[in-house]
Image (cartoon, rainbow, N blue to C red):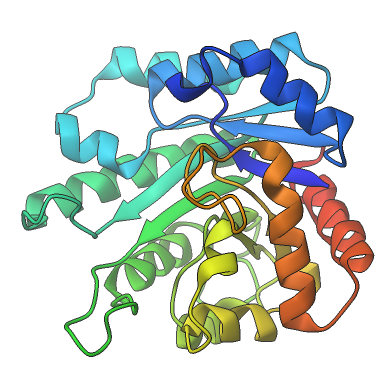
Length: 288
């Protein structure tokens, strides 16, 4: 298996990082992709990738980075491009739009526009370096009665930006423009959005431990059912979102097995088939 989205640079692994990595590779995990969310974490991701043969890095600035700082300059841009040119970097990410407030404060129009500015710049960098893109997209929560359903604005804004800069609104790229390969990581979007974009050759989805504790009526389970396995990759997003039966613990790459097993259960296919196809998807997507 390949854990396509981990944060093993996180401070929660500072005391036993080598042991966590060893535990993953001594089990069924073949490769780990560790993902940046800012310049510091991207730099640490590259360092870890350079230390291990089967660890690769993704570098980028998370949308919350732009909300938190509301500024960045040429020095930041130059540093990001320098990191992105590292040999073990396989994508730009995680980048995108975050419209869900974690502290109850409204995300302003200015914050959304600055997120878009940073997202577009990093898409252009990915295009320049011919790298795929790992997208973080999270919408506002709907009103009570649809507690676990996200509103679609963030997803539609992401799609509009992708189409405006890299395509013409269909699966056919603009003349002379290759659509970037993009994966919606930790996908939790609506069924109607998944149905809308899943036929596009360049768009993929990755899922993690939240599948294992989703309620039986959760829309995300229907999403997994309809998306072809050839469009799916596995991830942990560790140290967050630990799956059942490890929920409440710190997550780690070895636990990607529980995500694989849950997808197999949802789709009524073998775990071996999920392993084989999702790993093949990852290899082709990231071009290891």
